[in-house]
Image (cartoon, rainbow, N blue to C red):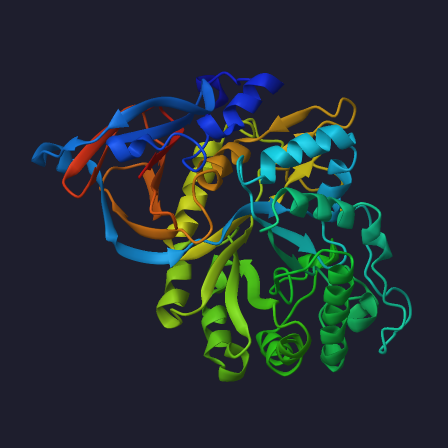
Length: 474
């Protein structure tokens, strides 16, 4: 995608409110004209962002249409959908906390309220990540096997208040948490930067998780799932908080310590393993093959930095009862396409959903214009940019791609079959719990008219190059 092909459209506050209001966003609460044979349409392209287009109508399909259409079969169902969202890291919460209370409340209403963008799955961190204001754990200093010095005081300044404000906007928020590193004294090398887990501290580390869950619940922020480690297969060469976990360590930790402890004390918190790239699909299968781990591990968490999304399908084939969740990926703020790469993200999210993922969680929800704060330097940007001097909010291409999914796909929706032989066209179809249906289409090619066919009826929508369309009907 080249910026020379499009001119960035800057939305005023009034225009943004119109773009995210109930009447122009999604079926629930708005016009349900699909019952009379019409389809509501929302478009993002070079000239508009999630703009409501004139409705289109169904008509009897012809053989000619069928040859070039996206073919839908609502009777062929796949996985349920948990939701969509982004990570509320230490860095993201710090930047969001710089907004005035009124601006932050308005933004959170736009992002999280069910009548608006409806983001309902978020990730937070257990201690510091690479996107933090500093390196910290909840039990610093000398070895403390009894965890007598455990404290989440760092999080009380702005992380917990931000998480509580988000949940106020969306009480159905699903929040999961990932550590980038155990406390340094639990690791080889004694540092949170790089290194690996010391096996003789596995029991204490499970207690560390339990204390974290207790403390967050007491602060009004319940956690619905945890991953034992962000990116188990790398120590990041000691450049940032990270921890190498051999496969046998993760199996032992989940099956002997973390899993039993959570089942006893935190039965509402699930365990998602791996939390790393597609190319580790073989490791995921091996871990799920272990019957003791499988008692406690509900899901596999995935990143898309290395490998192909189809590799998740191999894990699903081996363990069809294991959930898949896409848990990290963010835009490059130095890219000239940062503001306009929605088609790339539309393709990424669609590929994950077509390969059994039940949720999509982008990386940092918000960072400043330099992709900070971070422990890097790193070049990842936020889904939103909050400018450090003016507090102006810029919405990335990833933001608009997320909107095409989150605003109309409800929790509990079920993906159903969609097929097409057309090149550079990505699509995902779902049926919501109320029976309404949605189709998200990403056109990575030239401008074209896209035909859609279901149950002998067809409709057409015009799409420009590098664009996205969401179609909704009842």
